[in-house]
Image (cartoon, rainbow, N blue to C red; front, top):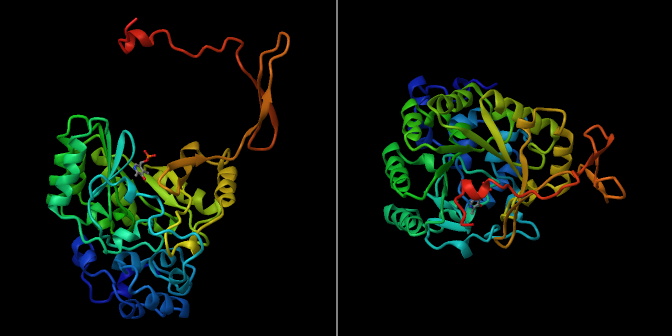
Length: 391
Ligand SMILES: *Cc1c(COP(=O)(O)O)cnc(C)c1O
């Protein structure tokens, strides 16, 4: 089923393995998709109705993973619009994270004091149907040219409080190595920028993009973390494993951010299987995102209880390393917060000789008391020495 040669006869192995070929041959029309496998009525209508509102693009590689027999295939649901996407949902927002109010430069979103999001482009090799930044990746702002990026770098340079730059977009790995090297070089030259992060879906949607040359290039800008976006174990192919392996072997740590998508990965079994698989790729699950209120994504959104239930089921039953933070990026631009099932049942006050403490429930539902120490000053006396504080 997943042999690409059946779906793309006549394509040479060398073309298939070339990331530029994948990008250039991305499927961009309903007709191109319909040639590969029969589309459902909901998909045909979705493709028609979203034609004007959001881009369509699926790399041949990602399309080769689609299960032609099942409309609910997780790859298919992420890549092909259905009619519900055009209908919208109550509460949908054009700028769901209130980013535009925090854009001191066109390519910079500065919401948290010490870190910025840097938009390196508005294009992707696959347009996720759950895209949260579709007001930008829809193409309405125009692209981000050299001068837009230079303006962003100048902003970072002028703000010494910024120690972490998250290069995103769009997908920065649609850029050629030379362009990427230029941008990362400019950011790396800023003395107060400690770490760089590069957010990309390339290991998932165009794993051929991760070449040994790219891995070495990224390593030169260390400390740089690649943050990728796997949502389902079906995406964890040998090609994806190789892409992640090249990065990690080169010395580039890789983290994963998933988005909880209703009917796609919204069960504990799916999240656990994905994250256990990612750990074998040496990729660490970082965030599990509650869906943002982006226009056209309502049909994929879960109630918060779904994500909480998933974390509840994972704790104690898989490696702690496989358990991500469940993040809700608050509307109005207020930033991300994380939520957890509550393992804490309550507090017991100190009485007589007893210290206070807390009652917990274990992952198996058993009760335990954890006492607080009687002495509760948590200051560290050596701090004054280590940080050179004035007495
Ligand atoms: C998510 C996000 C970041 C990074 O947040 P972390 O919690 O540090 O991963 C930075 N800026 C913006 C605007 C973001 O949305």
